[in-house]
Amino acid sequence: MMGGLLGWSELMLALLFIFSLQTGSGSVNAGAAPDCSYIQTVSPNGASGVYSIQPGGFNSSFEAYCEMGENGIWTVIQRRTGGAVAFDREWKAYKNGFGFASWDHWLGLEKISALTKDKSKRWKLRVDLWDFEGGSAYAEYEDFRVGNESTNYRLSVGRYSGTAGDAITGPYPAFDQNGYGFSTLDHDNDGCDPCLFGDIYVVSCTGFERGGWWYSKCGCANLNGNWQPEGDNIGWSSGLHWHTWKGPAPYSARATRMMITPMLP
View 1 (tube, helix red, strand yellow):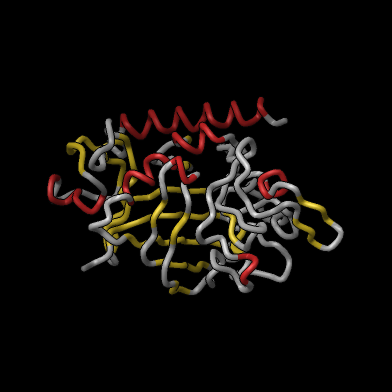
View 2 (cartoon, one colour):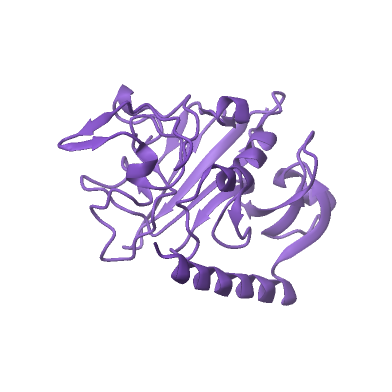
């Protein structure tokens, strides 16, 4: 559809990524920590950046962006700042991850599952949202976990707090995405069989909203749809949506970030 344009954009991102490595703002070689919360034990003066991560039981290390903030050290699992990296991808891409850890990316369901499978830890998910008007909001969920592939990477979240509203659970029971498996264009695990929105008949949420996500029917949250530019970001069915934050018309965010950290005992 837009393969030529996206291919050129991703090439430019690759060149920017290589430049960041050459200028010292890219990957940090500090050994493979189990997750970002361990980084300062192997690199006491470590700043936010890309580090090598290897959760227990995972067969190889991988790069992840570690956000060092006043409220903890977080492992970033998703970031969107524009439309250069396509998110309307199939199961294999969402399983393994795509994009650049230092830029727009999806870390990968297999990696997120490996990070959160340790039952001795409780994990917190933080979602950050930025609009085109200079505003921002956040949502946090306690007890975040993602199952393994045999569960279709089923989502589990606990108590919500924040300023963006609880879009994952949603304002109505039918919109609750908690407990659902992940869906992509070629792997449908949503609750639509079918869904009817006014006069719109939807068989697959991913076909309707494009990006892979933990859909129910289809729900109020999806941060992996098509990025929309300012002035063209309201009313689209596909976008970076968190419907409890903006409305009533669908509002596609300017930027998003999802990240996780172990909860304190």
